[in-house]
Image 1 (spheres, protein in one colour):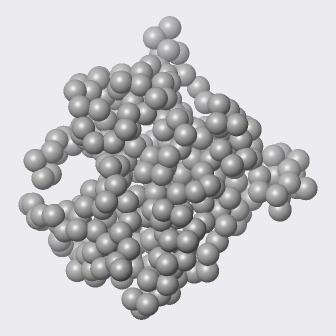
Image 2 (image 1 turned 120 degrees about the vertical axis):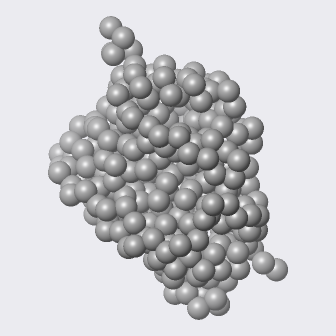
Length: 317
Ligand code: ZN
């Protein structure tokens, strides 16, 4: 049996100032801050999660914001573009919104689809595309009503230093189907409705360097803990060296680096972000895993305060 991922679970990137990060993803893009926690491997740094109303798999972008972080260089071995899906008929709304925030954008075509491409405040490359697929987000914030809201990921453009080997992993390990080639890109489709279309430039991209404004890793969905164990075995039997299963509180994770240089993770859909917070109040308090609770005061004092701010209405006043 070949396992098939439903698509992207989450994408994790580096940022600088945490408040600027919240202002961009909540204030400009209208996403919900669904979890405010720390980097479990470095508790002096936030780990911020943004997604739809529940932070469903396929909608979650996460950041490690290091205040004063040096910028990275986008390149091979990274996610090149993070693609967000917006409801059909809302592209003009988003153009106007980006202009209102002084964010410049360019427009591109791939596989017969029209993309609005822009950068976040650190230079991370993002794009918006209209699609019918994917459940609408019910989250409304800062001038983005539910009928205009980002639904989640459409997919991603992967910058590989070895596209043939990356293509092999997408098809033979992750169980995606190659569905076409267009103007130097291959397109792969995963089984889900969101985060399911992955584009890969057919020419190797020169290696990038990590830092603020670059993606650290991309995680793919495993349906449950049992399937997750199967994924780990499948990755190992293909010659990659997966990490042990790591408990990330909101999902279980296994990591491996594919030969195109990109750090891949397999992450479980359960348990999700309501495991330690009321779904009505996600992201409001600093959440720590049990093993850090006794250091809460010290950890909290070491973090810059952040708040989710309605920037659109501030601009209009
Ligand atoms: Zn991850």
